[in-house]
Length: 375
Image 1 (cartoon, rainbow, N blue to C red):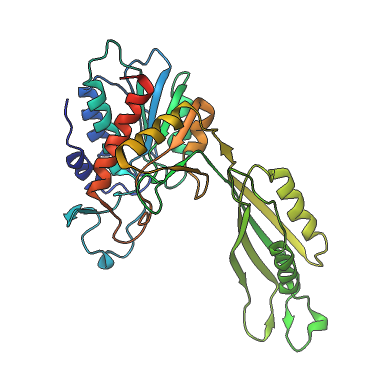
Image 2: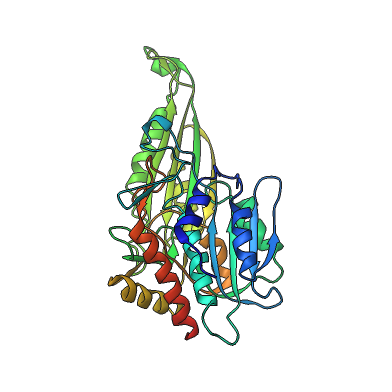
């Protein structure tokens, strides 16, 4: 069965699937996958839609393609050259929300799989697709929910179609991701008149001292696979009027950390810095992701060889960037990589990709399948 990759991509991009809404994306994908012989299981809940499809549901998968149909909001519509959900091709460039993140990659995965299954093989490998509509927001009703409801989910290989390419298509394959921890701290002092500081206690003094010390922490020096852990202060709030010492102040910060810095070490460090505070304080934290690493193996060799063959590019591994659903899948797969289109315009106004990269991604996925299963 031959699939027109661009045609499928345009159908998906026309759906206004702002997270966690799937619109009709998974219905469209189901139609294609059923024609290819896939068994379909819809794992929906009140919030999100999840699609699980595989050739043989009674056996572990040889390879799973994973991705998401949801997109982030388009922002100010007046700033778009073309409407975000009316995908438009101009001068070999495809514009629209979901172009690089990651509806086009889904189309490429299915098109490559269709071409692969057309090959003369006695028994094709057991290929699966795990697709959610809740990756850009809360992952709980998305991939997490799906994995809990798939019977004995395991795959030898997994390819997540996130847009990993950076400067040019094919230059980066991700083999892991950093962890993410966010802190929220409220400092409580005593409100008063700025002219009578002895009758008040300014919580900003404690907060500023704490943030200064926090910024001077060297968490680690990274490793061969990971950059050094990095902290960014993201919110500071305080004050009622210019002549009033505030009663409280608030700050938030996020740390993207590698395996060299454990969560225990991070928590202990933050709490130790707060010990000298003269204010009462309330602190909470959220660990939204733990770091993980997949050492390059057979799957990485197969996809890096495919990139070199189809794109004449020497790819490299990376663990940079934000979090993805790969963090939930890694423990269910023997080998996992993330590979997709260029991420330069991901989440931006006028998100776009070149049609050349669409064709190249389909070829790379197909060649990877051929390399893995000797076809």
